[in-house]
Image 1 (cartoon, helix red, strand yellow):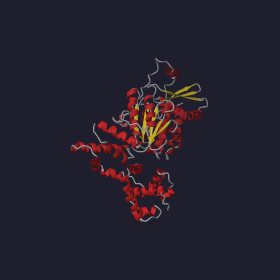
Image 2 (cartoon, rainbow, N blue to C red; image 1 turned 60 degrees about the vertical axis):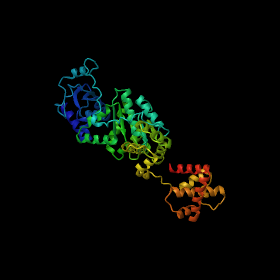
Image 3 (cartoon, one colour; image 1 turned 135 degrees about the horizontal axis):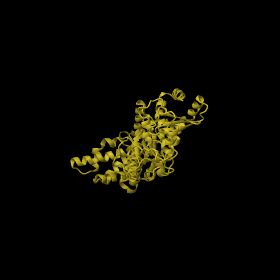
Image 4 (cartoon, helix red, strand yellow; image 1 turned 60 degrees about the horizontal axis):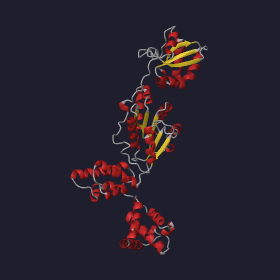
Amino acid sequence: MAACWARIRARLRDEVGEVEYRSWLRQMTLAGIEGDEAVILLPTRFLRDWVNSHYGDRLRALWQGEDVMVRRVDIRVAQPAMAGGPEAPPDFALAEPGGMQGLAESLAPSPSLRMPERPAAEPRSDWVVPLEARFTFDTFVVGKPNEFAHACARRVAERPASPGFNPLFLYGGVGLGKTHLMHAVAWAIRELQPARTVAYMSAEKFMYRFIAALRSQNTMEFKETLRAVDVLMIDDLQFLIGKDNTQEEFFHTFNALVDQGKQIVVSADKSPSDLSGIEDRLRTRLGCGMVADIHATTYELRISILQAKAAAARVEVPAKVLELLASRITGNVRELEGALNRLVAHAGLFGRPVTLDTAHEVLHDLLRAHERRVSIEEIQRKVAEHYNLRLTDMVSARRARNVARPRQVAMYLAKQLTQRSLPEIGRRFGNRDHTTVMHAVSRVAELMQQDAGFAEDVALLRKMLET
């Protein structure tokens, strides 16, 4: 029996390779033969389930090749005394001869004989990114672009692993609040259900820990640690694009946790269907739960965020300053908050009130970097839509007032919002002379002083083009 078992192990090592053998199969021990059944022991339930599902059929085939009397293989979780301990031979262990009766009794489902189950391991502290204390649901400003993602995150925090919400996949551009929501979910779960273990880490850290486990030949600790948590949160999943081995490990971790009813929360910069470089089977699993996107912020949401941050800092910021920041810094909430922090810090250091002039002075570099690059074509299209004209009217020879005045407004805005020269602007408006553009600019400026309604109209167009 010992010789048969040694040959079976050697065959498995040759078939699966040294790395996979050491990760999954090295800790197998043979307890003995019981009738037509070979009994194999493994130290943990996780290992038992994995080996049974991935290698069970092959083990049975190898045993039948060695001994035709063996028709089944039973893989069980060993008692500590039977697992051989650290001093047991790494490649072969055999129960004491004639010990099958005792083995059967010890593995019987008797509470008095069964060892208590090992409690779920806490994720190692050096594996988990510390949560940011200010990233909670209370500090998350909700608006139309993020209200759906916020509602989904709330639902997961209150009822982890509820049907339809596992996994929760959050996606959106940089600085729109994905990380904030993930931290908020983690804080809420820790507060509402402190018994649950939550592991939050970036995809980059997941990869580095997996590589370290491979190098140290300690992948079992890596696998068991992650599979022991109740909630696994992976930020910036797009980092795994092109990293096939790490994707493979994440896929198996994902399946193991979902099968156990554990919650998974993932964030990325794109939806699962748009993540090119991710394996199809993983992309499919990521999209099988709840997918929630966070859109780019609106002007109103940016104003609300700035007001909340100013209130939290207990600093009075004039509405004009908030409007300046909200209209000029449109893409990234982090930069928006950073601009407000710079302004508040400057005011505090020099004992000055926050004013519009101070904002222009302190944030000149940031405001210049976020200047809206408006094209003449975009101006023509927006003005034509506003006045219910055809786009071709912007370049036509028609001189009717209902066409000529909007065309002059478009020329005026082109001069104000672009760096194009007067001759170039004239060429874009049907090869008109630069003097025509000069007349249009001066005429619109004159009308804006005379007619408040007309001035409001032009100001509205300008604001729409700048935001």
